[in-house]
Each structure stands twice: as structure tokens, then as C-alpha cells.
Image 1 (cartoon, helix red, strand yellow):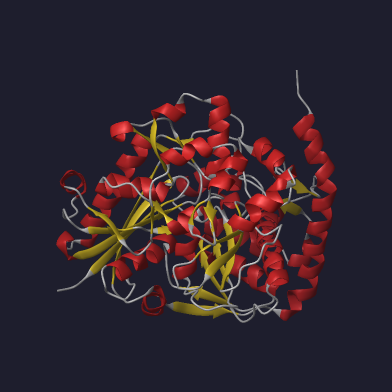
Image 2 (tube, one colour):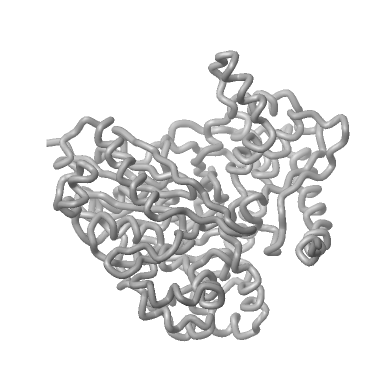
Length: 514
């Protein structure tokens, strides 16, 4: 009897269910979408009732496409965007909209915390990360100050992985790799830390926190009701699941130290694993990794490939319409790659800061923008600037990682949306001047979290074995040494202009139009 695994992945606007055989081959997948709600500046939310239904639709769609007996699925596991906040009311009621990880409403609260010297003595030595505005601690504090009635309505505080697992099984839990990235967990004890909650002024929320669960442990089974809704077999075991950056790392085969993994999408995710963790002030995150003794060292921000989607949807709607009218088989993304190919790296000094959804500029009020445009700047130059700006944002993160661990070397394992663009991959290789190993996977999160299902169900004894069996490298992209100097110059220009923007961003933040 064939055995299958299901991975469910919820991003900022999409929900995906994918079915794999035990060798990591994708059998079927189905993607559904939710609307991103932006009722106020800095807010990004979603309707939780809609979210539940699109998850069920994704599962039904994957099962239909796979045409397998659902009883042959030996395990299910979920992943999703890290952080954000999903509150579950009593008896499964919805308290308010879910909050997505690109939300920035609480940035002023975070600024106050980071300016407090006690943060460096109380919080960072326990959490090993920098608190930021869409982490649950920040959002819970914001709710206390702005929507205080929410507290009494809430039974459980969830991440999106925990929320979907709760819907599938009726069992509440807070998965450890997710929890370790929330500024709630003491990395030494792997438990909630009362002193940290007290510093943030949210100690009363400890009563609403579910028990911590591990990624590869069974945390419930598909209920009869969910089986009827989705077509899954009642009683199918569901694993704890994984933090999306952890799932992405596993999907690239990151099982040894000193190797670099990059995942592109809405978030620029750059990471390696290590048995040694350090208190480093400007490091984005240290989180739990499901391989014994290892932690995931991550530099990340929402500054990656989705900036291109924004640019297309904002400025290239006429081009999309024309391609459709002409019956052109070229996708808008392939069209953009073609435009980039029209411009040589040395032909344009146009700079783009890819901060539409957030920044890695070191200031919370940084916004996106182009520098260097003239009346003669072509559309192709604008698109190339977007491509290069995204790579430069990744490079800035990786420079931090290199400063922490100078032994990171060898080819870079890379996955995510930009791997569909040959020219974008070449820009990556040329900027980093390192080979890129492309992972043969269309859904990083779903594949990575399916490994948790594989370990839970006994298909493989551990995550290292699961990754070894389920991850496949399709090819390698070599850097062009002829472009090394020009990209060194352009990246230096990017960093210099970034510093010049600090004052402008502060002025924009402080100016009120009346």
C-alpha cells in the first residue's frame, strides 16, 4: 500500500495543501486565497471564517487532484507565516480578524521596548532575538491599549499553524519552533518565560497560552466533522507542525552547520543552523530547530520577491491586460524577466528599496522607493531595479550572518518564487559570487512541514533522514565573475543611499497633514 503525507501551508494571502509520496515527490497540490484586509495604515488582517473555509477548500482540491484513497495519508502537518496573531474565542468562536505577519501597527510600542536598557538584560538573553511589531507580544500589548475587550473574549492565543491544527483536530497547542520565534519563549528552558511576559506588560495573557507541543509529535486526529467537510479520513494523525522558516530550511535540506539557505517570497529568509547560540543585539532571530542540539539562526524581513508582485499590480496592469488581449502565452513575470534582460548591470544606477511590506533598514518607519529616476528611465530599468533591490536586501541579511559565523561557505541552497526566473537567479549568483543550488520543490513550506508528518508517523526516524530522502537538487547556477565588480559598486551605492534616507523617513513619519 502506497503511503502519502499532506503538508498545509498558510502564507499572507494564500492557503495551500500538498500531497507527497514518502520520497518527497509532489503528487498534487491546491491553492486557495484569502483577501488581505488593510482597514488602517500599517494594518494587515484577514477574516478568520474565510480562512477556515479556504483551508478546507485547499484540502478538498488536493485530494481531488491526487485521486488517492485518503486513508493512505499516514500523517498531516501544518505550517504558516510566523508571528502575527490569531485569537480563538470560547467554544471555537471568532474574536476578531486574524493579524498577518506584515502588520506594523505596534511599531511605536516596539521602539519603546528596544529603547529600554532592561530589554538587553531581561529579554534578549532569554529569547535570543529582537522583538518586532508583528510578533504576538507586540500585538497583544497593542490590543490591551486599543481593544481591551478582546482579552475576556479570548480562550486561546494561536499562531496560524496552531489555529489550523485546532480546526482539524479540536485540540489546542502552541508548537515549539513557532513559539521560539515569538519573543515569548526562553531558549534555555524551551518554555514560556514569566519575566519576559512581565517586561512586555502582558503577563495576564499567560493564562490564554496553550500548552507547548513539539513539531513531530501527534497533536490530535482529524475529527469526524472535518472529515465530512474535507474528504480526509477521520482519525488521521496530525503533527505539531513547523514554523514556516523552519519548514523552508528543511525543504532546502539544511541539516548541517555552516551551510546557507535562502528562501524568497514575501519574506527574505536567510539562515543557517548551529549548536552554538549567542546573544547578538542586531540578529533578527534564533529559534528552535527540530534536529537535536541545533538552533536556526535567521536573518529575515518582508523584503523579497513579493515586491515585484506589488510593482506589477500597481504599475503594469495595462501590460497584463494587453498580454491577455493578445492571447500571449508569456506570463507577466516572464515578461518582466525579459525586460530585465534588455538592461545590462552597468547600464542603470536606479536603486529600489524593497520595503513595501516592511524593511531591514534598521528603522521601523522605512518605506519603499526608487532613487535615481529621470525622465529617460525606462520600464525595463525600473523592473531591473526591483530585481536588484530584492537581492541587495537578501545580501544585507547574509552579511550579518557572515559576521556571526565566518565559516559559512559553499554553494547556497535557494528556493522560492525567484527560482522561476533565470535572470533573477543569475543576479543572485553574481551579487553573492557563489554557486546557487536549486531545490526541486514548488512549495517549500508544504514539503518541509510534511517531514514532520513523516517523522511523527514513523516513515523516517528523524528530520535529518527525512530531508535526506525527500529533498532533491535540480541544478546549480554559477556566478559570472565578470559581473562581480559592478555589483560590488551597485551594492555599495545601495547601502550608501540607504543611510541617506534615514532623515527623510523620520520626516515623513513625524509630519501630519491637516
